[in-house]
Image (cartoon, rainbow, N blue to C red; front, side, top):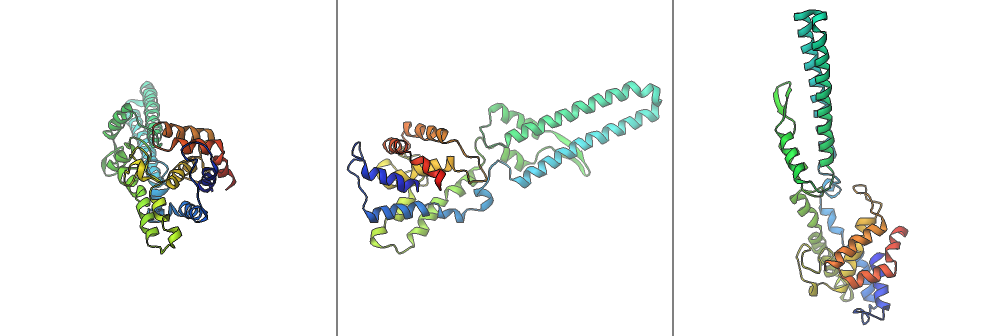
Length: 291
């Protein structure tokens, strides 16, 4: 709906670089089919990767939380054992000050563990991890606790790797897997025996993650190789990805914030500034609320 709506605006515009661009019925149909099918390749991406909202998968996060609960219980058991030893060796009266100190030490230890968990939960968010964050994560990875079968690290090597993702929620391999959906889409669409009037559907969809400055994916192609149909789809796809409220793995961004993000991309030459101007002027973005 968004891409087709923008195409209708471009078809009617009488100023700017797209004043002479018009789409016939077959071309509009091409745009509509490409817009509907552009993400079909995501069926080839593992679902748990496709919907990964945070750095750790939910089950892995549950295991981490359970381990730190065990660490706290271990601290309590160690404190209780020490109390018994003191009471047996020194008696109630003499042991009282030492028991109070043990309680204070335990409270401090429990608070420290809670602080570590709070920090790790923050690291798990798909946000940028600072240098100080990397350093603290490295320090936590060096800590150990006593388990039933000996000393164990606070964090597994895989947890450290995941929580060390510098930005976003995906590892490099996971990101490549998701980005691969574009190629999967193109390969699938290319096998369809399109009529002559719809032969451009695969190529229109193929470029929807390319950018005008050549930093997109999967081909990093230059701007002159990106047709207007794909440029429109790129803008609409970015807006939909940011503002759609039907994605359980991410919160929707407010409409104005989403437009600001795309405007920044336009200023940096990544998306077509003229098409984005038409997108905003015609309020094409409001259509996402009607879907």
